[in-house]
Length: 263
Ligand SMILES: NC(=O)c1ccc[n+]([C@@H]2O[C@H](COP(=O)([O-])OP(=O)(O)OC[C@H]3O[C@@H](n4cnc5c(N)ncnc54)[C@H](OP(=O)(O)O)[C@@H]3O)[C@@H](O)[C@H]2O)c1
Image (cartoon, rainbow, N blue to C red):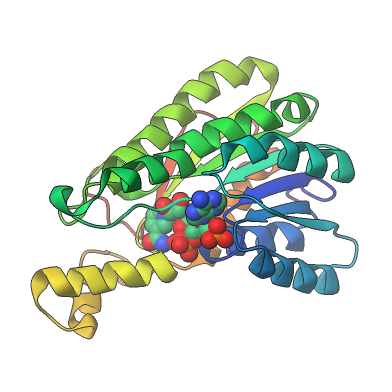
């Protein structure tokens, strides 16, 4: 299936590793030109170098962006958009949450992670808006998480961060739809990245079992009985970015092997 992505231009936050890294790689494979954003510029450059080698027609720029340093955001977005010639797709993937229970989380961590994810995606979308408005296939895709709808027992922060991400997604879909821009969220279950491995450690600690036992425990909660890979999330991102998804907006799609209890 031709996804209609060749020569589109995408910005990906959180591209330095994990899910964002996988999404950026999948977009490049479809011929999308990329702006790779993260604090760890060396890892973004390493990815960019590999993608330019593999897909010689794809242009890739890397920029250091710390979403806690809000003043830097407009210039980073503007410089990439001007150099690549616009923005069609914004993937807001940067994020995470401090793992722990209420009394274990300092105030500064609440502020830090809200700045990165729900506030970060608001600021990124705002800065990208002038270019998205000009695109004939404008897409905003926010990576949320299943604990937004179904809070985890062991960690309080993931729920409000991801619920806020879903809520902003819906509100922006309402506002930006008439301008031809779709806005959607993807909610992954625990995924095989650095963050996914932290979850195994935390589960082992909470249950008082080994990490191997914690992995088995976590897999029992997944009807498909396997760990989610970044490629699973990247494939859904490609479809939402594609020319076939122009009428999908204001929705959140779980990708969790059936783990969520609600539909
Ligand atoms: N892995 C899972 O199990 C899982 C499940 C559900 C949802 N998610 C969500 O998926 C997204 C990616 O998760 P992941 O598993 O790929 O996590 P990860 O491997 O920890 O990667 C997190 C990404 O966010 C970026 N980031 C963190 N703080 C930032 C800041 N202040 N400014 C700019 N970028 C920042 C990091 O880049 P730098 O360090 O280079 O800045 C990195 O690229 C997150 O939003 C997460 O909540 C993950």
